[in-house]
Image (cartoon, rainbow, N blue to C red; front, side, top):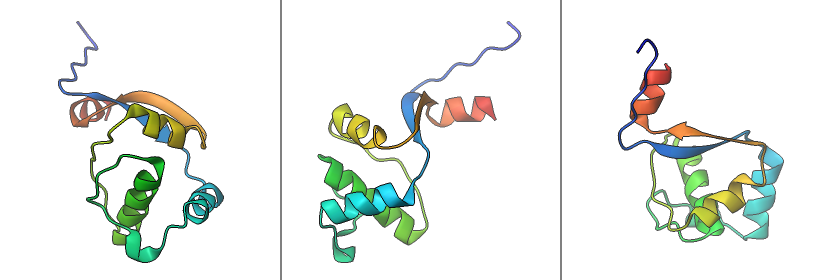
Length: 96
């Protein structure tokens, strides 16, 4: 087997093409204030997801988070140009 990739614990990623106006519109529509940004809050809604993503941006970092429902991710991703890919550290390392 010349080109084999085995991803243990890999996931499905939604890669979105970032769009500032879309994110701004979401923050405004959900009435999100700077003091509500939190990287560690449970993600149970699209509003929670936006709060978390903005917190990561504010802090200049990234990370992995559990989202309670795939519908939350799908709803958020549908607002952007999106590519669904295999993810997880093992898969990304194999691709690199």
